[in-house]
Image (cartoon, rainbow over all chains, first blue to last red; front, side, top):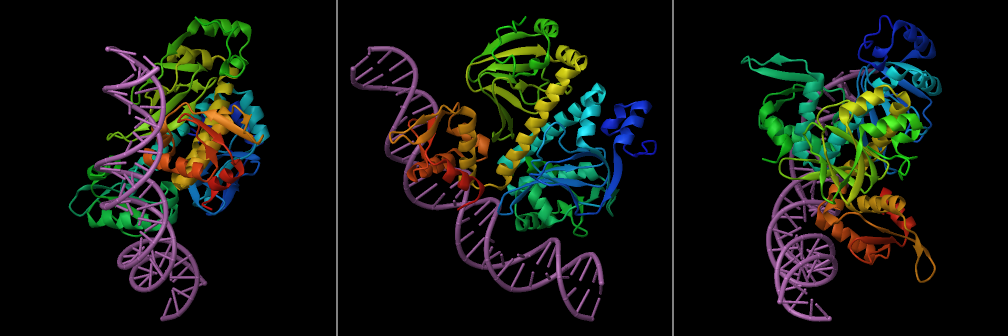
Amino acid sequence: MISCDSCVVRNRAICSVLDSVELGVISRIGHTITLDKGQTLIWEGDDALVVANIVSGVFKLTSSLDDGREQIISLAYPSDFLGRPFGSMSEYSVTALTDAKLCVFPKGDFEGFARTHPDLEHKLLEKTLDELDRARRWMLLLGRKTAPEKLASFLLEMSQKLDGSGCDAAGKQLTTFELPFGRQQIADILGLTIETVSRQLSQFKAKGLIDIPDRRNVSIRDAAQLAMLSEATA
Amino acid sequence: MISCDSCVVRNRAICSVLDSVELGVISRIGHTITLDKGQTLIWEGDDALVVANIVSGVFKLTSSLDDGREQIISLAYPSDFLGRPFGSMSEYSVTALTDAKLCVFPKGDFEGFARTHPDLEHKLLEKTLDELDRARRWMLLLGRKTAPEKLASFLLEMSQKLDGSGCDAAGKQLTTFELPFGRQQIADILGLTIETVSRQLSQFKAKGLIDIPDRRNVSIRDAAQLAMLSEATA
DNA sequence: CGCAAAATTGAATAGTCTCAAATGTAGTGG
DNA sequence: CCACTACATTTGAGACTATTCAATTTTGCG
């Protein structure tokens, strides 16, 4: 049982298209759960029995090779939808990167509800199409960009997503944000090793493009230069 | 105007969920066109004004960097759906790799029809979810696999998709198929250079894993070995 | 304060790319 | 049918990028 009235993602998640009657129905199908940082909701290769909306927290979707190499395939934020309706096996794992709150639905029940609520399916379709565009854009990065280009792209994307703006001592506008992941995870997002990530960040810092107050925080000092770097090795 | 009665992808394309009345309507919305090999239907960065079903032919979806580096983001085959409904700008180009036949619909008209036909949207949702899974699986390859692993994975995937089976002189089962693309395009699919692709193919041939009768055709001689190679560097 | 984990740095290696040349193939017109 | 051209592919040598392995430093936490 879910109380949607007070839900913080109420008008961004797929539920935004439902009226109060429909909300009443779906709120009885699912329930809310909390996950601790590091807990896995869905395992790669398993039959995923649930789908969910993210209420709070950040998740990673990962796919792995036998020998342990891992690729982060997507990041998911509050109001994003998790899981794979209308299919059986999950091709990836879904893991919380921070403490998180979800509202989860048994997959079958959700599917039944969705099939009888075209507006919901439409919303889900739009989200899925967006996600497909994002995945494809990332494929260009993974397949064709160099390490510095990857890092620059990543930092810019994160600054947009996580912006907590501020100014430096000189009053210059700068974007600072807290990354919800460590170096290894950045490497897994970009298809690099942890050492390469670390080296590139150090170089960007040395060049004055960014600042690294502590290992979880980054400020962009020269977004224009980073944007240049993100598309071509200058 | 389209004549769906004789359509060869009638029961695989998204239209498969429509009844004869609905088919009548949608067939008046769209029309069929042919494209020559190499022609581009949709340009990256443009507002795509059409969506389409592939009747025959193979298409590539590509995304590029300013300096010309290109990544093939997806391949599309008969019965696949092209275009991006419910969005404006296309993030990728869509180009015919072979002569092709399509049935195209003005995007707005298609969207209108889809919104009033939940079954069609559902089918489109399922296709989009499948495509998202495929894209994500490919991200693992692009981000984490080595050149030999990439080639092995590619050959196996193509053999499944394009199988025209046969046997060799000794009667051993082997899969031969014709690739609808050249070496540069294989490189663009795998995020490699043309030289690396060529070298890897030569090595596989030298090891007896494959045969290359001519530059467009490949036969798999040892699928098991290739499968090993595709997941780990032996 | 001291420990364990995470991150950084260094040196050497391996893998892939770049540039260049040689070879092979398809198509055209004589 | 063959020679010729344009293009695709293969092969080679060397350069460079990112990785690997190892050591050091930093950070967070009990």
